[in-house]
Image (cartoon, rainbow, N blue to C red; front, side, top):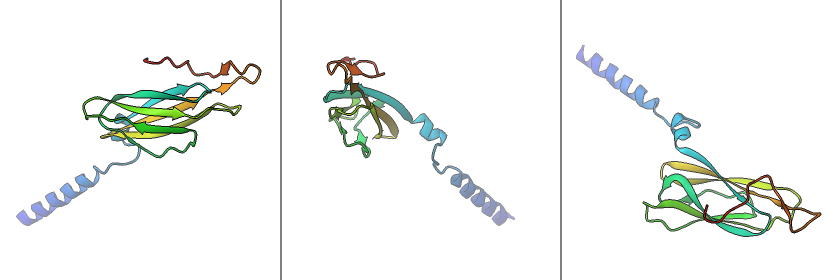
Length: 137
Protein backbone atom coordinates (compact mmCIF):
# COMPACT_ATOMS: atom_id res chain seq x y z
CA UNK A 1 0.00 0.00 0.00
CA UNK A 2 2.87 2.37 0.79
CA UNK A 3 4.36 1.78 -2.66
CA UNK A 4 1.07 2.82 -4.28
CA UNK A 5 1.01 6.03 -2.26
CA UNK A 6 4.63 6.79 -3.12
CA UNK A 7 4.03 6.20 -6.84
CA UNK A 8 0.87 8.27 -6.74
CA UNK A 9 2.72 11.16 -5.07
CA UNK A 10 5.57 10.85 -7.57
CA UNK A 11 3.17 10.98 -10.54
CA UNK A 12 1.35 13.98 -9.04
CA UNK A 13 4.67 15.77 -8.48
CA UNK A 14 5.72 15.21 -12.09
CA UNK A 15 2.36 16.42 -13.39
CA UNK A 16 2.47 19.53 -11.21
CA UNK A 17 5.97 20.37 -12.51
CA UNK A 18 4.77 19.93 -16.08
CA UNK A 19 2.19 22.64 -15.41
CA UNK A 20 5.01 25.10 -14.57
CA UNK A 21 6.43 25.18 -18.09
CA UNK A 22 6.78 28.76 -19.29
CA UNK A 23 4.40 29.36 -22.22
CA UNK A 24 4.18 32.24 -24.68
CA UNK A 25 2.09 35.12 -23.38
CA UNK A 26 2.06 33.63 -19.89
CA UNK A 27 1.36 35.75 -16.83
CA UNK A 28 5.12 35.63 -16.17
CA UNK A 29 5.87 37.18 -19.57
CA UNK A 30 3.20 39.83 -19.16
CA UNK A 31 4.52 40.84 -15.74
CA UNK A 32 8.11 41.01 -16.99
CA UNK A 33 7.56 42.84 -20.29
CA UNK A 34 7.49 46.61 -20.62
CA UNK A 35 6.73 48.84 -23.59
CA UNK A 36 8.64 52.03 -24.19
CA UNK A 37 8.84 54.47 -27.11
CA UNK A 38 11.43 56.87 -28.47
CA UNK A 39 10.63 59.43 -31.14
CA UNK A 40 13.10 60.99 -33.59
CA UNK A 41 12.74 63.92 -35.92
CA UNK A 42 13.44 63.34 -39.63
CA UNK A 43 17.07 64.40 -39.20
CA UNK A 44 19.79 61.90 -38.34
CA UNK A 45 20.33 61.71 -34.60
CA UNK A 46 21.43 59.78 -31.54
CA UNK A 47 19.54 59.54 -28.24
CA UNK A 48 20.60 57.96 -24.97
CA UNK A 49 17.52 56.13 -23.70
CA UNK A 50 17.10 55.04 -20.08
CA UNK A 51 14.97 51.90 -19.98
CA UNK A 52 12.24 52.16 -17.39
CA UNK A 53 11.76 49.62 -14.58
CA UNK A 54 15.03 47.70 -15.16
CA UNK A 55 18.64 47.78 -14.01
CA UNK A 56 21.58 45.82 -15.35
CA UNK A 57 23.27 45.11 -18.66
CA UNK A 58 21.05 45.12 -21.75
CA UNK A 59 21.10 42.54 -24.53
CA UNK A 60 19.64 43.93 -27.74
CA UNK A 61 17.64 41.61 -29.98
CA UNK A 62 17.82 41.74 -33.76
CA UNK A 63 16.94 45.06 -35.36
CA UNK A 64 14.88 44.54 -38.52
CA UNK A 65 15.21 48.14 -39.74
CA UNK A 66 18.36 49.26 -41.55
CA UNK A 67 17.81 52.88 -40.49
CA UNK A 68 18.25 52.38 -36.74
CA UNK A 69 20.98 50.91 -34.52
CA UNK A 70 20.72 50.22 -30.80
CA UNK A 71 23.83 49.77 -28.67
CA UNK A 72 23.79 48.85 -24.95
CA UNK A 73 25.86 51.20 -22.78
CA UNK A 74 28.24 49.96 -20.09
CA UNK A 75 26.55 49.13 -16.80
CA UNK A 76 27.77 47.83 -13.46
CA UNK A 77 24.54 45.89 -12.92
CA UNK A 78 22.98 48.23 -10.38
CA UNK A 79 22.53 51.37 -12.48
CA UNK A 80 19.45 52.11 -14.60
CA UNK A 81 19.85 50.41 -17.96
CA UNK A 82 20.69 52.69 -20.88
CA UNK A 83 21.01 52.12 -24.61
CA UNK A 84 22.17 54.41 -27.37
CA UNK A 85 19.70 54.66 -30.26
CA UNK A 86 20.90 56.11 -33.58
CA UNK A 87 18.57 56.81 -36.49
CA UNK A 88 19.65 57.69 -40.02
CA UNK A 89 17.96 60.67 -41.68
CA UNK A 90 14.46 59.94 -42.97
CA UNK A 91 14.42 61.20 -46.57
CA UNK A 92 11.20 59.36 -47.42
CA UNK A 93 7.70 60.81 -47.42
CA UNK A 94 6.44 58.44 -44.71
CA UNK A 95 6.97 58.16 -40.99
CA UNK A 96 8.71 54.94 -40.05
CA UNK A 97 8.57 52.76 -36.96
CA UNK A 98 10.30 49.63 -35.68
CA UNK A 99 10.15 47.67 -32.42
CA UNK A 100 13.13 45.90 -30.86
CA UNK A 101 13.16 43.53 -27.88
CA UNK A 102 15.83 44.40 -25.33
CA UNK A 103 16.47 41.83 -22.62
CA UNK A 104 17.69 42.88 -19.18
CA UNK A 105 17.92 39.91 -16.83
CA UNK A 106 14.43 38.36 -16.63
CA UNK A 107 12.79 41.43 -18.18
CA UNK A 108 12.01 42.37 -21.76
CA UNK A 109 11.64 45.97 -22.87
CA UNK A 110 9.86 46.36 -26.21
CA UNK A 111 11.41 49.60 -27.46
CA UNK A 112 9.45 51.19 -30.31
CA UNK A 113 11.47 53.72 -32.29
CA UNK A 114 9.62 56.07 -34.62
CA UNK A 115 10.90 58.76 -36.92
CA UNK A 116 9.01 61.63 -38.51
CA UNK A 117 9.31 63.03 -42.02
CA UNK A 118 10.32 66.37 -43.48
CA UNK A 119 7.53 68.57 -44.86
CA UNK A 120 8.07 68.65 -48.66
CA UNK A 121 6.49 72.14 -48.88
CA UNK A 122 8.82 73.52 -46.21
CA UNK A 123 11.97 71.38 -45.75
CA UNK A 124 12.76 73.21 -42.50
CA UNK A 125 9.48 72.05 -40.95
CA UNK A 126 9.12 68.46 -39.86
CA UNK A 127 5.86 66.53 -39.93
CA UNK A 128 5.21 64.03 -37.16
CA UNK A 129 2.50 63.04 -34.74
CA UNK A 130 5.16 62.31 -32.12
CA UNK A 131 6.08 64.81 -29.39
CA UNK A 132 9.29 66.74 -29.90
CA UNK A 133 12.40 65.24 -28.34
CA UNK A 134 13.82 67.24 -25.45
CA UNK A 135 17.36 66.22 -24.44
CA UNK A 136 17.65 65.24 -20.80
CA UNK A 137 13.95 64.51 -20.33
